[in-house]
Image 1: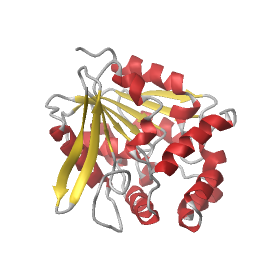
Image 2: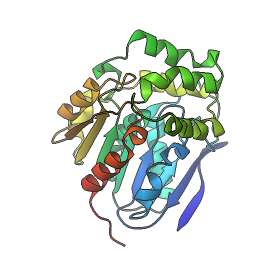
Image 3: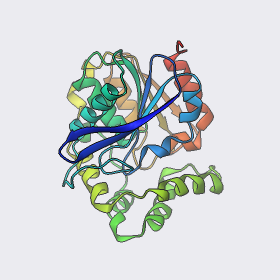
Length: 271
């Protein structure tokens, strides 16, 4: 079963979403900075073989259509997730996976919409600017200067900092091909980045009651693994897993391991 559509979020604002597969509880996947939901291509089909998987394009990326903004705020994007779940007909608590920026949106979703999350998985993310360990200056410079390069050049420059050294070049090239098929406008990339910089859930993480899995790659230079360790310590009862030979794009560097961890954490789905 495949469902797709847009959710109206204001005059001229529509959030695109898609649902794959079936089985309950449903699982919603929230993607990271500057990337559309197509970047879940490595794990979404396998997850959808066992449960209903809901994908969405955040503000500023993919097929979502919203007004230009200086900042795409994380609380607003968390509310977008809630609106998508309503449109998808999900009335029971869902499982949530957030990657990078999507992990911050996922944390805010749990905090803003209590009772709607059964279990939570946070991949390569942190608990907000206040409680984060920053990347090295050269990595941050690349992040903030993407507008000076073509999309392909920007990906090539960032590659050593977000993929593990052992990941084959053809695997990384496949990721880049998906990203370049729907590149993010530099203004929207900046708006998401400013939203990330201005958000912190650090002082509220103790309120997250959903059983939580935190996963980080040991080679992540964009969001260093110290962030995952601190996040897991801050969320009551959270489990922390640090994957070897994995960088920021943990789903690419260690696809099989990520799928195994998610299946273990979320358990089996019912028809």
